[in-house]
Amino acid sequence: MQTCRRFATQGWIGLLLIAVFWPLNWLLPGLRTHVLFFPLWLGYALAVDGLVFLRKGTSLLTRSRARFVGLFLVSAPAWWLFEGLNSRAQNWHYVGRELFTAPGYFVLASFSFRPSSRPCSNSGTRVNLPPSHECPVIDPTRARWPHSFSQAG
Image (cartoon, rainbow, N blue to C red; front, side, top):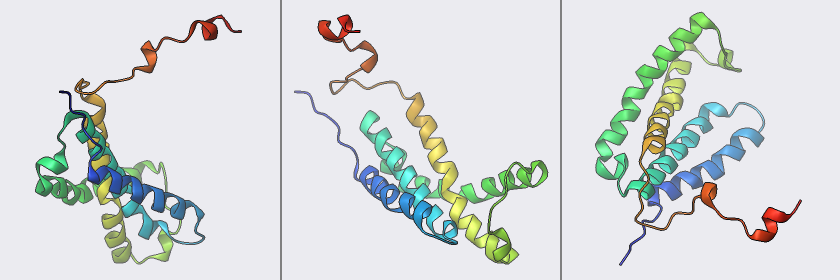
C-alpha cells in the first residue's frame, strides 16, 4: 500500500506567516519593515522546510530543531559580512535607516535579517533533491494533451 506524505505543519505555519505579513509589509503606510521582515522570512523558511519534508519525508527542522535554530543564530554575523561588502559596493541602501540610532539599527537589523540565509540554504536543498516517487507525481512536461487541443489553432 502506497502512503503519501503530507505537507508538514511547519509548512502550513510558514504559509500563514507569509499570507499575513507579505500584504502588511506592502500595504501598511510608514515605517514597518523593521518589524515585519522577520516573520516574513521566518514564514518562508518554514514553508520551504515543509516542502523539503513533503518531498523527502524529512527536513532540517524535523531532524534537529537545535540545528535549525542554530542556523538562525549564525546567520546574523554572515549577514553583517554581506552588509560590510555592500557598504563598499553601494549596491543598495535602506530607506529609513537614518531614523534609528546605530545601536538600535544594529539590533533591529540583526534580528530582522537573521532568518534570510536559512531559507536560501533550505531552498538550495529543495532544488537539489532527487524526486521521490512514493506518491503519484504529475509532470506537466510529460502531460499528454487531448487530441482536440493539439489540433486547435
